[in-house]
Image 1 (cartoon, rainbow over the protein chains, first blue to last red):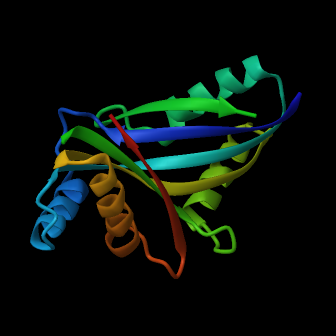
Image 2: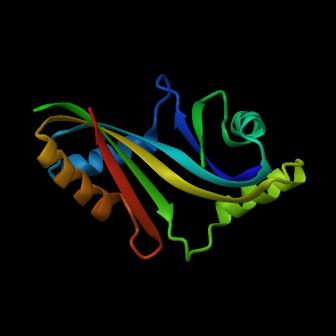
Length: 83
Length: 83
């Protein structure tokens, strides 16, 4: 039962076009960054948690990531719990 | 001179309101996740790099993060280069 943080990454599935990432890639190419081969853009969340065990935190964050933060049709997620 | 990836996190500065994070926090509270104290939302970028030394990758990614990916008025960034 301590204060913890959760980090959640939500990324477009690799099979899904990523127009934001492509736009940035084009911009970088125009700016002369020819060694950048690809850009993918996703979302990153930091959740401050209090009063949960490590096991409860894992369960709740996985459920939050799956049901609230991610659109499962086009996105996938991963997460970590940090002290 | 190898293929590398760069990860860049761009987050709202801690002194800046984060309306997206606040909206998610409110939604989670409504859904019963009372142990989530705060949510911050940022962006996460994956850059595929090819043909740069580790030192060149570091220099270019820091410049890209600072000049293209981040709005320095309201955001801050960090990055890592991974093999």
